[in-house]
Picture 1 (cartoon, rainbow, N blue to C red):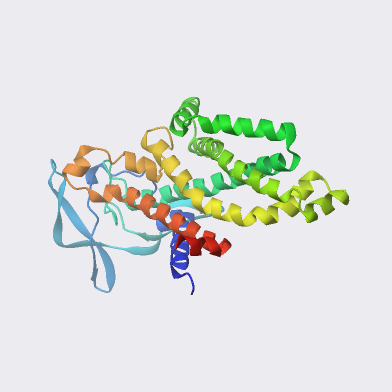
Picture 2 (spheres, helix red, strand yellow):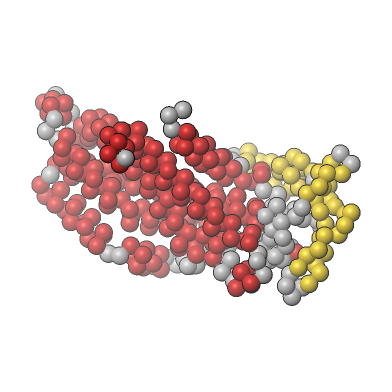
Length: 341
């Protein structure tokens, strides 16, 4: 392989999205499923006994510092492909099968529990579904609007070009964080998780489409007087058909690179909003919301490190997308890679 790093991050991101897609099946619990008797429970140990995998049982030794001790010789057998809560696999197929479970009142906490005894592993997987999909949906919106606005502005020029560019400059002149907070603050608090998700995507897309449109506009201006475009005009093709059939193929490589490099901005934007309490709300889960709930000083004082894992997930995902974007850029423009050396 010429680009093993690119292949590695592509496989990593593919695994992330695959896990998010099947989060209902892989997760033993739902995000709001609580167990108040097992708050701040550490990750449970696993051991093999009598031909079966077991989960170690614990007892609360110190309620003040939330110290749990193993109960030697006691464990709960892990049941694979067991029946649990109902859900729709991939949102379509009704089922109640889960990859693994333990019988109540025992709990399996692969990555510990939070302040209300919710499974951190399950919430991390459900949170991945929101945090990862928000980037794909958002980038699809800004690529479509950015291409149409920039492509038509560059093709028509004149008053349309001036109006489009001035509006983009107006949006880009406002500090992004303040505009983000103002736009989010205009919406009511009584919103469903789906409505909140949709509005966050719209807000982040509104802030990001201008940069793409400006670059597409410049590329369209350079293609406007090419012979193949002029030939299409002579044949009587409509402006939308010319932009879509002749301009788009010539800027598509840029759109792919820009998309891979812009997705981390959506992930970080959602995380920032949720961290500030303006994004995804309970009972849903996202990485930003989980990270905001780890602000409690008790998490740091008592070393509940497992509650900081959403931050690690955000970090790894953002780095992976940036590396993937660099690889795509090198593929599209090999000369740029040579110059960077």
